[in-house]
Image 1 (cartoon, rainbow, N blue to C red):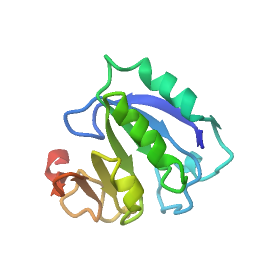
Image 2 (cartoon, rainbow, N blue to C red):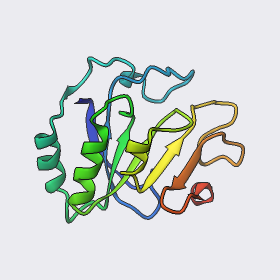
Image 3 (cartoon, rainbow, N blue to C red):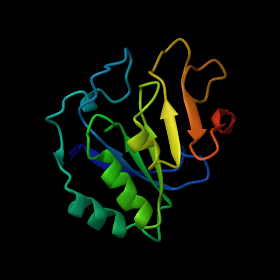
Image 4 (cartoon, rainbow, N blue to C red):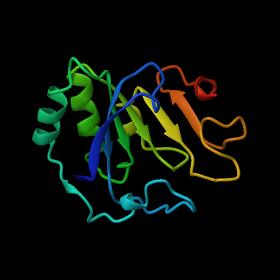
Length: 146
């Protein structure tokens, strides 16, 4: 797996400080995508599991959640999510798909689904097609973004 960049985010996961990994290789190419640099699978640097664990270890006292912007197309993503949980982090995936595999789902705390449709807006719109859920309860948390 590769990653394009990381950053700390305060808005994408309610009540969490997230270390965000931007994963290249998205094939959806939603019209108006805010991250077109993630369309090319060749962008970014290699992210081995060892490197990932080393990176997240540096944030144990600073972040509470590991967020993947994409990456559901990589078969090893569940291993990275499990490693994050084993290191005390909550986990989240943002995907433009409507669902993900059970292997991924079982390693997530939160999941954002749905493609970007500009006329409907994002999670901060009451008209959005996107859904942000707490996986263990199935609770829809979209109202936290309004």
